[in-house]
Amino acid sequence: MVLSPNSSVAHLQVKIAGFAQSDGAAVNHRRRGLKGWRLLVNVAAMSRTFTIEVAKDYFNFASAHFLIFANGQREPLHGHNYQVSVKLEGELDRAGVVLDFITFKPLVKRICDSLDHRTMIQSNSPNLVVRRRAKDFEIRYKAQKIILPKSDVILLPLANTSTELLAEHVAKLIRRQVKARFHGAKIRAMEVGVEEARGQRGIFRGEF
Image (tube, rainbow, N blue to C red; front, side, top):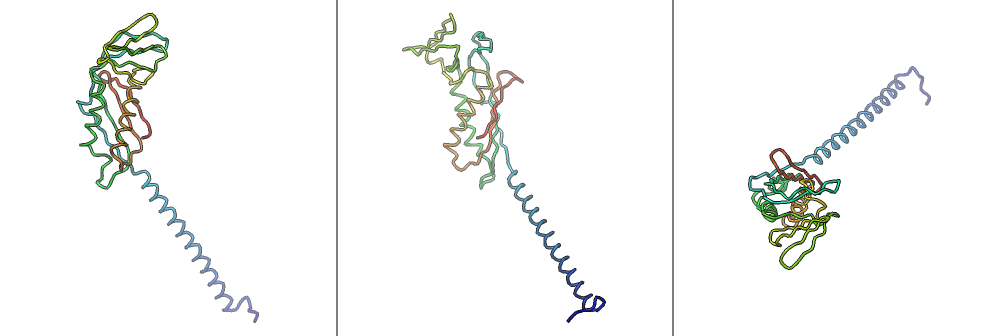
């Protein structure tokens, strides 16, 4: 049967088609809205990170060192009272913590103690020749020769003993021990600061 364009049935079919298109657009809009909401939820979950910081007075070490500057000149042997601070960023565990302060603080303290009352020598410096002898170390710099008892020296695998490189060294030691001890920790990044004088420190930041 052919319907007249003016018939009531034809008008009804047009209205039904219009409703169908409108409902389809509404469904698509709701789907897009739901997809966008899920995306926002996922982004929020991904960006939900927490940070802990420990900077105790007893995170310190009193040590001697000397720098070799970019021009190859060595500064005199001298010492600092160093202070260490640590930040860890990551996800919370089931207890709602990034890492347990009680077990983490002694770990940092032991690392500081291993550097305390030592002369720190940068064994990877191209400007130094370090010789290990029976009772002492012989450190040669150009025509200079420094003899130090073995018990007074700690050789560090660094190109220099700047606060920046010391901070990176301490960070590596912390990372190694935390991974060995805190197996369930979900730590993403860390920051270690080594202060050699009040208001003067080097900072290392890196992935965990």
